[in-house]
Amino acid sequence: MHELSLAASIVESVTESLGAYPGGRVLEVRLKVGALAAVAEDALQFCYGVATEGTALAGSRLIVNLLPVVMHCEQCGRDVELAGVQSFRCSLCGKPCFDLRQGRELEIEALEIDEGEIHTDQVRA
Amino acid sequence: MTTRIVELRRGILKKNDELAAVLRERFEAVSVLVLNLVSSPGTGKTALLERTLEALKAGGRRAAVLAGDLETDNDARRLGASGAPVRQINTHGICHLDAEMIARHLEGWKGVALDQLDYLFIENVGNLVCPSSYDLGERIRVALLSVTEGEDKPLKYPALFNSADTAMITKIDLAEPCAFDRETALKNINEIRPGIRIFETSAKTGAGMEQWVQFLYSEAR
Image 1 (cartoon, each protein chain N blue to C red):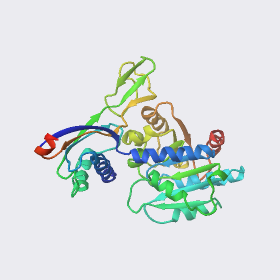
Image 2 (image 1 turned 45 degrees about the vertical axis):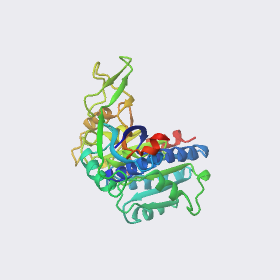
Image 3 (image 1 turned 60 degrees about the vertical axis):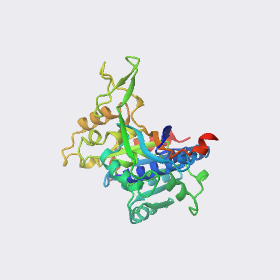
Image 4 (image 1 turned 180 degrees about the horizontal axis):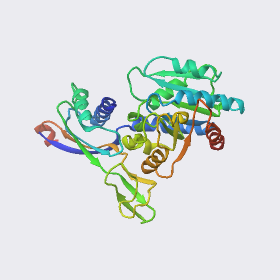
């Protein structure tokens, strides 16, 4: 259960990158989470609500895009997507795979930001 | 309201990963081999380390330990009996060690200079989930599984076993009373992390310790 630490890291990262958008408010945070990232989405959603309270992220949506494991199969010479995380064998030829190409991601992909009202003088300027 | 999509592509654990990379460089620069021991509580990480420290000392090697637990300095006291420098990290509720804790506990560690060490063992908090996400700058991550835990642990906790560089089955002296199915356990580890090197040890009888210590010798630079 380290989802609260993760939620706090998300708030920290997003708050930092908001520096370029003074007065901006976050509407949505999109994550990429690999199947081997050891993250429980329900727990993360709950902790996100807690961690964002009183920040520029308060009330924002957290979208979790789950990524399957992709291994490179030496036998087939190509990247193959695994159906789950119970067997690290090529889904085509059945040989064990050693080279992980996707599945450990724990990444903030993008944000949707409300930049606020654009004042007419700003538009003219 | 004006909305904008901002591409970030930033790792959530970026700060940890960056600090771990700095630590790894620091460890490599002074040729200290750092191992991160991960397992559930009660697998026998501390007992393994007691034996390991003894063997390394007899072989003239210098080792130190950072021992992680939520509370108590029991492990540090147990391991300190070997004469090796041991420092306890109490996380007070946090379920894993992170790179910042390692960096902080390397500072001001009385009588310990990294460049005087051959090995630094990090005994992680007993947990089969969270430690898999946190790089500590180690060169070798060892995932341990005791015969009392059941052969299917690697299947139940694939993220951790898949992140390991080496695996170890501990308490093999108890294999028979526990009706431990060795072949199934080895097969399960191999399903999750094909080709991984697997040690089988008993800290109580010393079985398998020679292969493990030989491995430590061969990995040191």
